[in-house]
Length: 426
Image (cartoon, rainbow, N blue to C red):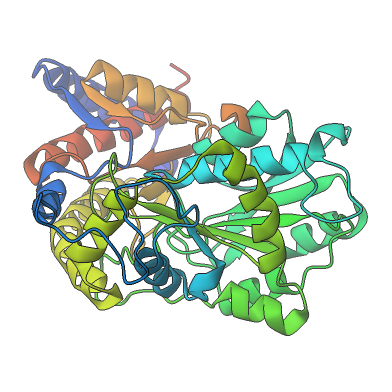
């Protein structure tokens, strides 16, 4: 029976039973972690042969005589640019391949625009007083951290099942030229797993910002990370922007961090010719070239984009049971008592759950005391401030399936216990 419909006596009885169950869980001495979206060891093992594709006999010189072991080729080797062009569905000439981290490339891109105008006639952002950035919420804490570092006022934009609130975005950017950009994870968003609808993408492409240097930071981190047999599809924002004459609006990012090795993958960005000219101007002073041997390793490992997609099917086989464990346990444990709402994503790395308002921090605390570590409550909002104290991000990928089931059992006990504490004002 839903807690909302229970009498005070029934709530007290449920609380006493759950309290005993919670103490039993605490006594097990658990040490489980669902805090970050890290691939599990079984996923990492899928790419072990990446380490063997190059050796002292490998051919490391391309048809133009460029030796990948040496300096040079700032934009990255052509084969790797083509691979990421296919991944992002853009012309490879507009792609730059970097190091192992797309987050690093995002930070560098914001840093670039802080000191060099991305648009002729505009000031560098450090000169803009009261500069602002739009932040879809719940969202990715590390995105928010970049704009926090550069002292942007971050404006939360609510997410819906079709993406960010476009009415709000259109209204804000049309009149405020101190709003300089927006963070987006357009496919299988972090943490809700939402894919932007075609209408949302078209409205992004048709934006008419007051700030000529407004940019959409399009972090397509999970573009091929399907976990069901009914994957989402995302409209190509670059093609839509060409139709509206806004081809300079988006800057795209991706990486192989959750495809091969998170600490030793390859990242890339894609942008219009005009944007890329400004970005490369910074990079040519920052670095001579990124790790071309790692780019070559990835090319030899995948062969081509189709090979990358085949590799992702192996990830899917590992991840689908984990997502099933999370969703089935939430359905079984929380639906009967009427506590919590959650997403059911077709891909990505997370499940987002909204627990009873005012209890998310308490749930995380209870879980920690029972040996289950979660991402801090509020992390999915700028400055870590969730106004409802309700959103929690579950990362199911790192634990084994057995550990994950145990962690989810503990999590559901904590969600119910925190709800009862609030209802009983304990």
